[in-house]
Length: 315
Ligand SMILES: C[S@@+](CC[C@H](N)C(=O)[O-])C[C@H]1O[C@@H](n2cnc3c(N)ncnc32)[C@H](O)[C@@H]1O
Image (cartoon, rainbow, N blue to C red; front, side):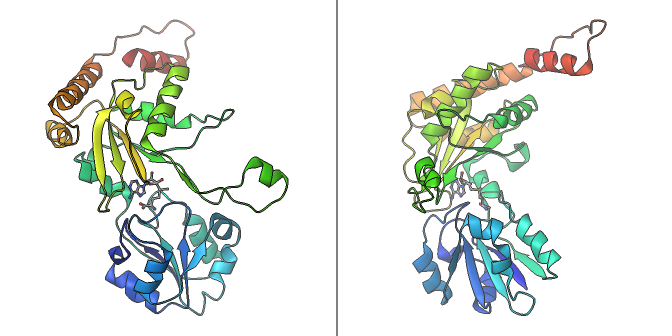
């Protein structure tokens, strides 16, 4: 049997009782070590807590060597540990599909995920739209497909959770070209970088999806003793000091409930910052309430164009 076991977000003891009991009866235990990290535990502390050896599974092993993970799983029990929930914003469906192909049974043992724990900032999970990922830009590569999803969410008044890039075991272009297996130190995107990149893309796209004054929430080290939330405008977050990883960012929808705002104000800072944030939420909501003007379709206009015009004017 293949067991996909969620570890939760922070401590080794965040694992569920059923997860721990299962690990202890498994022949091999793998830890998926590239899509997230535990906030208050590491490999030695996990091994000590579980009382067994834990094998690190990097991206290459999971994506290209899944048969190695699954070897013998038709006879023995194998555990595949995932930080958060095994199906929370990760792509382990591939491993499950491969297990099915090999006739290996599988079972998921769930746990808390960043996808639900962000509710701790006071925003209602019901009011979130599509989650997006933001990757590190390079000089020549600035992928902006997230922008369309944020735009769709904002048109519906929904909040957007942005998960920020993690680069683990990456090679520099030079080392890759020379075939040298030398890896760069891990990199975790900060809130400051995320805010800069978001504003850079708005500057390029100019579709007024969000701007300097858009209210946001920065979430750092969720579920750990060093957890922090910061409610601020997107521009103010460029100068924020988010500190140690991991971080996530929320762009608020422009239909924020009064209770959500009240809860968030606690994380805005001093009285002036609270007022600034409350004003930003109000201004954003006004934008949402503006009625969309009616556009008379011109003969020959296709529906996509009308929809595009509508989207632009609506914002
Ligand atoms: C690809 S997701 C993996 C999610 C994981 N499987 C789960 O269910 O929580 C990883 C991203 O989620 C966010 N994240 C995960 N844990 C976090 C935490 N404790 N605090 C803040 N952000 C976190 C970060 O943006 C990180 O890059």
